Image 1: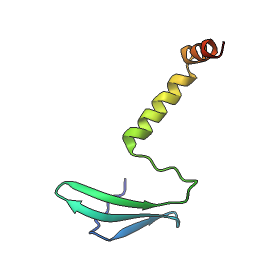
Image 2: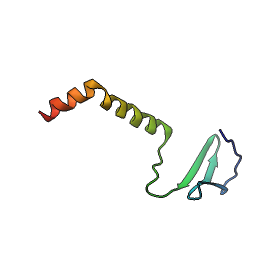
Image 3: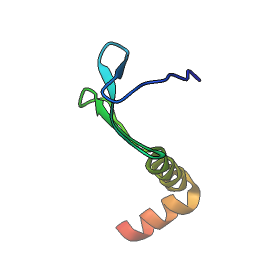
Image 4: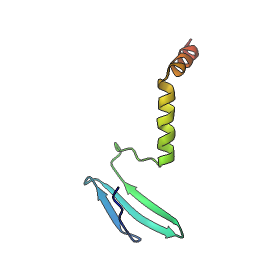
Length: 72
């Protein structure tokens, strides 16, 4: 993991086309602005984890059986 220090209005660039900018700092909370191409998905980690878990459930046999039951 790369750890960087940034101040308000400073940014970092990832892969020449993703910019992450520090918009605001209040106490222990930091507000980030992320500029990325539309084809690059950007998720909060907890949302990404939920998506991965849902995808995993959908791939198991019970999920397929339930889908077949729904579709008739």
